[in-house]
Every structure is written in C-alpha cells, then in structure tokens.
Amino acid sequence: MPLDLTRITLGVLFIGATLIACFWIIGPFIPAIVWASTLVIASFPLMERVQAALWNIRALAVAVMTAVLLLVFVIPFWLAIGTIVEHAGQIVGFVRGLETFTLPTLPAWITDLPMVGDKINETYEGLRDLGLGDIGPKLVPYAGRVTSWFVTEVGSLGLVFVQFLLTMVLAGIMYTHGEETAELAIRFGRRLAGEKGVAAVRLAGQAIRGVALAVVVTAVAQCVIAGAALGLAGVPLASVLTAVMFMLCVAQIGPTPVLLPATIWLYATGKTGWGTFLLIATIVVISLDNLLRPVLIKKGADLPILLILAGVIGGLLAFGLVGIFLGPAVLAVSYTLLQTWVGSAEHPLTSGPPE
Image (cartoon, rainbow, N blue to C red; front, side):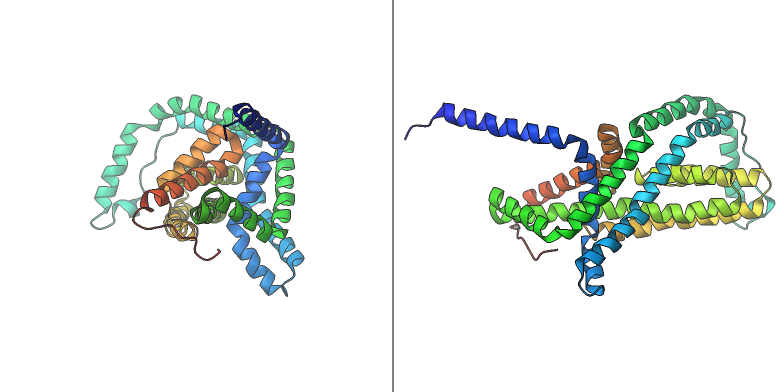
C-alpha cells in the first residue's frame, strides 16, 4: 500500500500546531509547574511517610506537606528575593566601601600560635600588601550591574508572590494525585521505549530529587546557621547578607564571600571575641556544605557538583529565577540518561521497583 505523504504531512503539522498552541496557552504557568513538580518529586517519599503517620488520610498529609514547603522552600526564597531587591542600593554601597577599606593587623594571640603563627601572619601580610583598595574600584561596576540584572530578572515582587502562591496550589494538587501522575509518566515512557523508557522515567525522577535536595536544603541549613551567627555577632545588615548568602549557596558558590569579609570587619573594629565566634561559625557552615550535600544528593542520583553548578548558573541566566531548579534538573536528567545509555550495552537497563 503506497504511503499517503500529504496525509502524513498534514497530520504532523496538525499535531505540531496543537502542541505549540498548548504551550502558548500554559506559558504563564510553566514556571509554577516546574517549581511545583520539582518540589513534589523531591518530597513525595516524605509525604507518603507523613500520610502513614496521620492515619493514612491523604488530605491531612497534603496540608502538612504544603505547610512544610512554605516554611522550607517558599518563605526562604521570598524573603531572600525581597531583601535583596529592597536593599539593592546598600549592597552596591557595601562593595563601594572596599575602595577605602584596609585589612587590620592580626591579633597577637594568632601570631603567637606555636608552629603556625608565623606562617599565618606571613600569608596574611601578603594579602594586606595586595590591597583591597585596588580591587574595590574594579568590583563596584560589576556589583552594580549584577544587582541591577538580578532585580530586572526577578521583576515585580507581586508577580513573584503570585507565582509562589500558584506553585503551592499546584503542589497540593500534585500531592493529592501523585500516584496517578507517576503512573501516567511511566506509561508514557513505556509507550516511547518499552522497559528502557520506564527506567528512564524513574532515573529522571531520581535526578530531579537529588538536585532539589542537594541545592535547596543545604542552602537553607547553611543560611540558618550563618545568618544567626551574623546577627549574634552584631554585623550590620545581617538580614541582607543572609539573603545574599542564600542566593550564593543556591548558585553553589557558597557563603564564604559574605562570611569572610564579615569576620575581617569584626577583627578590624576591635571585636576580637565576636570575630573568633564568626570564624568558627564560618568553618562549621563550610563543613556542613561538604557533609550534608553529598548525603542529600545521593538520595536522588549520584551527580557531579560541577554539573549542578553549571545547571544553576546557566538556568538562572537562561530562564530567570525558575532556572535555579530547571537548569540543574535538565542537565541532571540528560546526564543520567546519557550515562545509562552508554552503559546499557554492558549492563542492560531494568526498571526496578518503584521509588
């Protein structure tokens, strides 16, 4: 039977036009859908345990998990974004202050430490000779541009609030119908590529779970400890610095660019005790990043930190705020599927038990 090329071409065009129209219609909701899907995939096993503890009542479990998402994910992001936007001028002014700032001399108790005191003092004096006054003027234009770009990307805080509210509504719906949605995704994968498609869907979910847990939970834990330490030490604009730290931690840069200058400032103003306290807190926070993140990321999929870093930064540049989740999730899924496809010749892919 000869192929009817006209019929096939028209059919493909109709399907393509329908898909484009669908994406056009749901375009305003895509950021909220991505956020909600990422959060639900990452936390659905926890929701099942909560449901089991609440007499197996799904409605109660959904209410509890929605409240947890508000406290752990949405509120930190909302506070961080609002604080940065509100104090954008002060952030630039803080960087501008580096033009006249000079590093103080180290306290005597540090230079007098046996065996390491002289080495620490020699390294520190080398940093003093470099001069922050030479670096400050170069950083000011970039600080202004980065801050302005961030405010532009975030846009209206009211719009961000609406996106967060919509995310919570969608997350509650997804929690309620989680099993049906997962079954639909598995059936879609089986329809595309049989059992390998099913395994690919499961691996994609594991990759998304690993990214969400590793990036956001670690950032929240670090900023809670670091922000409390900044407040107790009496560092000015502690809330602003905590918001900046949160975004830096999400971007996988870490809190050091904020905590180290704050520690130096405390020593420079004669607050040696609080400077030492903040220095110890800095070491704890940095260590937490190396201890907590590997544990959380392996709960999803074993992903390289470089891949997460590229995904967060690239996603933020390409898609705005939602790219913080979307970027690493897309790269993680692609990396996991590619790794599985490369190894499928020697180790055939199996679907395994449901997660």
